[in-house]
Amino acid sequence: MGPGILFASTAIGVSHLVQSTRAGADYGFVLVPFILAANLFKYPFFEYGSRYANATGESLIDGYQRIGKWMLWVYFLITIGSMFFVTAAVGAVTSGFLQNLFGLTGLGVWPTVILFAGCTLILLGGRYGFLDSMIKIISAVLVLSTLLAFVLALFKGARSPEHDFVPPELWSERSILFIIALMGWMPTAVDLSAWNSLWTVARIRQTGYRPTLKETLLDFNIGYWVSAILALCFVTMGAFILYGSGNSLPSNPGEFANTVVGMFSGFIGDWSYLIIAAAAFSIMFGTCIAVFDGYSRALERTSELLFMKFAPGEVDEEKSKRIYSWSLVLVAFGSFGIVYFFAKHLLNLVDLATSISFLIAPVIAIVNYRLVTGKHVPQEAQPKTGLRILSWMGILFLAGFSLCYLWFRFMTK
Image (cartoon, rainbow, N blue to C red):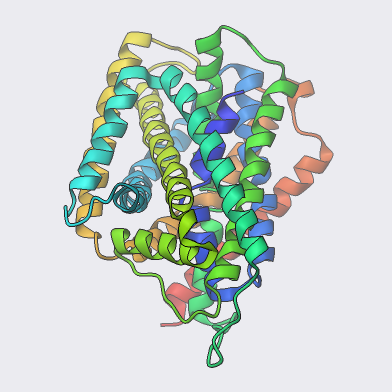
């Protein structure tokens, strides 16, 4: 067990704590079918990251080079174009809950500086081995505390909407754009599927044990479906606690965290404040450090293949460590710059990052499918007919909603 837990920690973050809670708060349970559809139709493309790594011993990024240098360049540009926005969105939310849990108010951007520096130093010191051990502890805390908060909300029961409350229209432009942003990171961005493969390869090198395909997929499936179940928990808590209250969620990270934790604990009982605050921060810290590692690892591997002329599967531990370190520093500084300029517009930043992720998802989905059904994967490790059918349905789903987003964003103005 390891890569699947890392995936879950990455997924159970902004998509759950922010977007799923907003979905429940604004729409009740109306958006649950969209959340279920996103988890179902994106499933094959994340699973293929673990499948390809186990079957070939190399990452999806190496596979992209096998398809052609052009695909490697496409992935590199996608990574460069999205990593600062995605990491900044995750970092801003995490910083807000850090301030809330430890009372770090009135310090401006310093909590974000502390957070980013801490993530960077932890990963520079331990890389995969330390990350794997720490994420398992964080994941245990976040799952237990989230389920406890969920059960407490169920026992408390749903609040009654205010008498003058009018839910937003589902098929309005605002709602459709939010639904696309919600699904963009549900459970997370499709281009992050390469991280599954990188973590799977790193786990094999760390332990010296080559798991069977069944073992690798079991690890992945546990992480994936736990994240899907917890998404429904957050929708439920948003619907029970915030729906119909007339309260809106602020965009400032610190105020957002204070509002969410305050509303949840106020509804359940003041005694639950530390449980809610600890759950929220542990969720976001696990996501933040996994995102730092994932982008740095992806940037490291694409740089090796593009600029250092590594062959697919070729590894040089010393060079890799140096490139990873510089990539980590680049991710930290670039993302902090985005946080600094978007500090007062958290929800806008989240929607921007999630929408970018959704637009590039069909390209990654098609390439991942091509890789695991291609000649480099042994026939016995290739997906069966049912998973192939679900893959094509997923590609149509992602492409359809991407076109829908572009239409509403640019053609209806």
